[in-house]
Structure formats: C-alpha cells, structure tokens
Image (cartoon, rainbow, N blue to C red; front, top):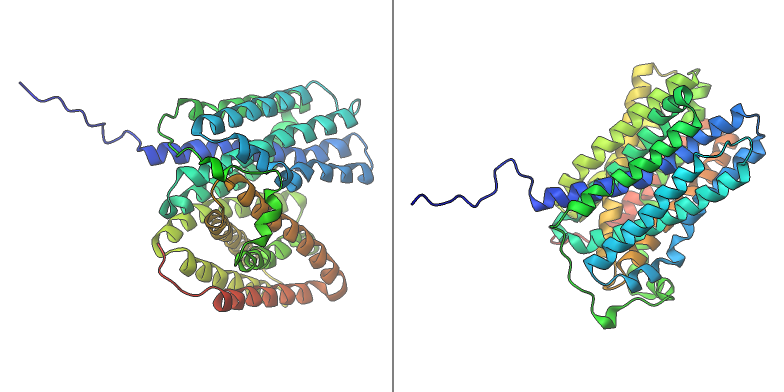
Length: 410
C-alpha cells in the first residue's frame, strides 16, 4: 500500500505565521478607529463651524489609553488561560464595534457631546482589549520571537494611522460621516475572524500565587533594576517624538501645502515607519536586543543631526523627503526595541499590567517632550530645537552605553 502523506502542504502557513497574522489584525483594529477619530473628526467639526476650543476637547478621547494602567491588574487577575484572554478580547472588541456603529447614527452638529461620550467609551473598550491582547502576546511567543510580535504591533499602529488618518479622510469627503463610521465598526468585527478561527495559540495556565492584585501597578516601580528600564523608556525616542511634533509646522513654514504635507508625512512617512518596524523585528531577532538597542540609537542620533543640517539650509523637496523617511524609520525601529524590552520586564501573572505601565510611560514622556519642543521652537527657532533634539539623542545613546552592559543575547 502507498503510505499516506500526512504532512501539510508547503504553502500552508505555519502556526507562528498564523499567530502573528492574528495579532496584526487585533492591533490594526485598535489603531484605525482611534486614528480616524483623533484626526478626521477635526475636519468634520471645523466644517460644521465648531470653535478651535471645542475641537481641542477631542484630546479627552485619548484619556482611556493613558489611564488604562489603572484597570490593567483586573484584566490580569481574571484572565488565567487562553480561553479567558480570548473571551475578554472578543467581548471588548464587540463592545468597541457596537459603540463605533452607534456613533454613525448621529450628526456631529446635533449630538456633539453624545458622540464624544460614545467615542470615549469605545476607546475605553479598545484600551481594555489592548491590555488583554498585549498580555496574550507576551505569553504566546518565546523570547526569541518577541521582536516579531512587536513588529505586528507597530505595523498595526502605523498601518492604522495611514488608513485612519489618510485613506478614510478621503472616504469621508466622498461618502460622509454616517457611511464611513459604520464601516469602521464592521471592520473591527471582521478583524476578530482570525482569532476565532485560530486553533494554534497556546499558553500555560497562570499559577494561583501569581494572580494579579488591584494595586500591582504600584509595586511595579519597587522592583530592583526597573528604573534603568524606565530611564530608557523616557529617553530612547524622545528626540524623535520632539522632532515629529513640529514636523508639520516646519513643512508649513517651508511653503508646502496641506495636501503636500499629508502625502509627505501622513503617507510616505507612515509607510516608512510601517516597513522599518517590519524589518526591525527581524534585525532584533537576528542580532539581539542589546546590539539592536545600540544600533537603532545610533541611527536616531544620525537622523537628528540630519535635521540640524537641514535647518541651516533651504532644503530641496528631495532632501525633505529623505529627512522624513529617516525620521519615521527611526521611530518605527525604536518602537520594536521599546516594546520587546518592555515584554522582557513583565512579572509572571502581571503581563498586561507591566507592559501597559511601560507603554503609558512612553506616551506621557512623549506628550511632555512635545510640549517642551514647541516651547523651544518658539524661543530658539528650528535650528535651536533640532540641536536640542540631537543633544537629547546623544544623551540617550550614552545612557545605553553606560547603563546597559553588553551580554549574551538571542
């Protein structure tokens, strides 16, 4: 008798590929609506003649993602198995989608505060889903492959920014608020399909002694050696964030139109970050965390000095494009090292809590450096600002050389 071939066809995706794809869809499902609501909705409000003060209220929709560390221990406490995480992710993704769908039933001009309230609730559900997704990602991949899952996270974020703040802005102009917004909700539901069909994700059940407590986010800061990681989180891409925060005003002052700026930064820049984060995942996997941390920090230093040089010239469009690609690529690569090392610093049973705390630290430090950068630019001009960012990048590079010792790494 001829022996039956029980092997899967060579074209059948591996378990790792399926798992990476599953998480990519979960991450991009978070990013697209958030990017859309935080950018495109401003256009609609301005078209409806809302004041700039009212538009500024949109910043409150980001609060759930800044405060999510407060309830992250609850997610860790009640999700002990893969089934528990899966149920949590599906439940909050459904709530997220339904709230987005409901937003589409109202006109901004008639129900502004109701819409803002629904968006805050939607992003609260999304933030909770993110806590569970991050924790499951930490538990589902071994140390060597954590850089790959973080590539999916960054690619989802940058891809979501590109679609939510770019493509959907064009769709909004052609199809209107009450058609585009329900489409977002439907997409969020579709993004659940890979998780529902995936049977390859495996994690070990948490031990009872490792179950999270509601105050665990406080004890994160009492751990020995954690402060060198916190210093790294604050410093690593602060210079890139500072430069990005003034990039659009800088391009305006150089004479570029809003449409040109949208293509240069919103499309080309974000696409560069998307590709850089994909490649960075393999680089980290290949040469290790410490070597990658240092290599990407050097790339950031070179990028900031490139902008110092630009500020003393009347740059051509080609030189500006090169600077934008360098800037966004630096950001994309840096996020992989930040997220991967953050996963290394989580405690057993507190994966969602500890990873969330570290991402919140990067968000808050980014907001702070953006405010500082704006003040410096006002007083010292772009030359002074870009020089400040270059110095900050050098401090970050020296910090890594000094604090993180070279060691065997995989």
